[in-house]
Image 1: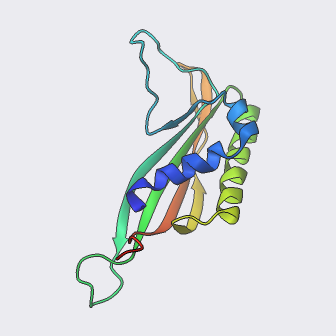
Image 2: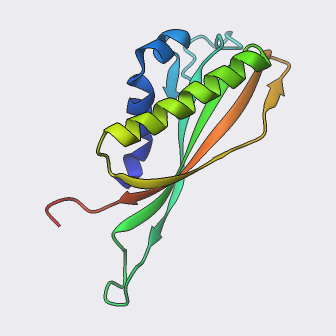
Image 3: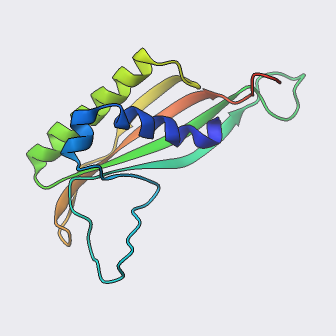
Length: 144
């Protein structure tokens, strides 16, 4: 499940109907598909969930290859038209993800949260920020 941990975060965000309505369903995995080459920008707000790599935790000398847990890095990019919109939206996304993990059993056993600096894209224009989750994920199937 480690290599698909981003799908858990997508499911978490999708679990909040009011949030999905607020972003008009513009929730993307990895990148925004733009079918029209002439389209410069996607409307804001939107959220992009990215899988930003993983490291395996080799836990014992008896298992020379891989341990049972991976440290997986997930990014959640959030955009808003104004700084106020961004503040409200990032807090809602953060609260939604936390609530989802508290209420649902997933392969993610724990995570550490950080957030990057708020940025401004004058070409769009919009404000954006990346929420970072460093997750501990159990990586073995039940039959192993």
